[in-house]
Length: 241
Image (cartoon, rainbow, N blue to C red; front, top):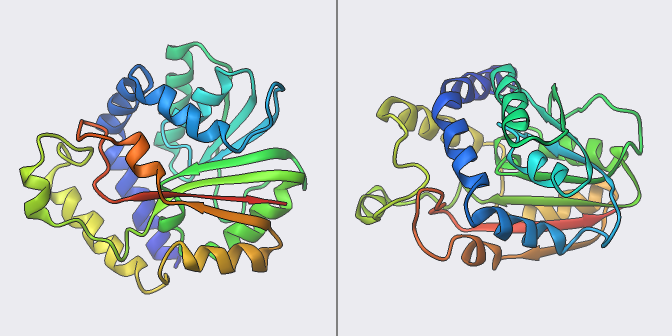
C-alpha cells in the first residue's frame, strides 16, 4: 500500500500545472453555484461551521466554502497541490488554511470539525475503512460527512465514447499520464468492492448513522459535456455522526 500511495502522490504532482488552471476556471464558472447547492443540502443553515476538505487538491471546495463564511482547512498528500491551493486562495481572496497530510489518518484532535467534505478522493485510498474511522473521530457530535465520488474501479469510461464528446475533464491529460492513471486504477481495484454499497457498510462499521446516497448529483452538476464534465457518474454519500 505504501508504494501505491507514493505512486498516486507522484501522479498528482505531475498533474498540478494544468489541474490548477482548470479548477480556477471552474471556480469562476456556473459550476461554482451548482457545487454550492449540492453541499448546502447537507450543511446547517445560517451559521458558519468548521469544515475539513480532505484531498483538497488545488483547494476548490475549500475556497468555495471559505467564501461562504465557514472556517475551512484543506489537506492533501501532495505538497505541490497544497502550494497551489494556497495560491488559489489568494487569487480568489478567501481565508482558508492548507496542510500536507495523509487523508487516511489526518492529524487533528478529536471532534475538530463540524463537517468533512471530499470530492473524487476516496476511490484513491488503499485503506478506505481506516479513513472513514479517522474521519468519524474528527467530527463533532452531529457532524456531517459529504463525499462526492464514483465507482471508478468498476465503471471505466470507453475511450471511443470519450473521443466522440465535444469536451470533458480528461481531454487535455497527456497520453503518458492517462496510461499511468489506468495502471493505478487497476491496482486500486484489488482493494475495492462495488460502490457505493461498499461505502455504506464501511461507514456504518465506522460508527456513522443516517447514511444516504444520491445518485442524481452527476446529472445536476454535469448536465452537458464541457471542460469540467466527468464521464463517470458521480454520487454523493452523506453520513452523520
